[in-house]
Length: 162
Image 1 (tube, helix red, strand yellow):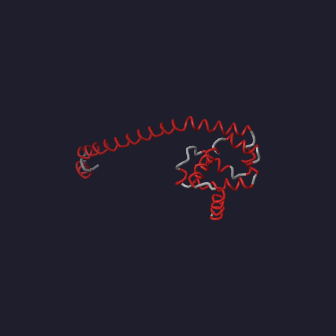
Image 2: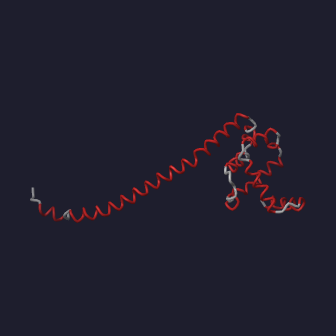
Image 3: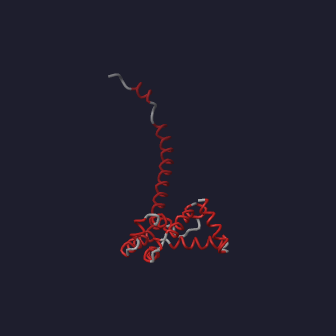
């Protein structure tokens, strides 16, 4: 990783790109990786066969760190970045059928993720409220039941021997 940082420092010195501009450019680029049609374009134009480009993708793994990941709006890009490390995926993404399948899965995820999380949160809140009511009812009922029921020793003494 230190070797990559040295290369990056030399690159920045040579190109004159400041750190803020680099951050914005890399953020924009990594988020483009969430688009399966863009990945297909990269594959069709042989970028996914270029060793330098693959090294750049490896370098971008730092975006997984929490201090950087908070800026990402399309988390699928991190999943795609991971998949792009696989040669098999780089070959498969060149197929329009694979692109359509990934695009469809993403659409279903985006359509239903929020709705499903809201339903899960509502169910969890209802269950938690039900447990709280049960504990409250149990504590008052338990006290009433304990007061109403005679101690076990007293009931045993009241029963005649068989």
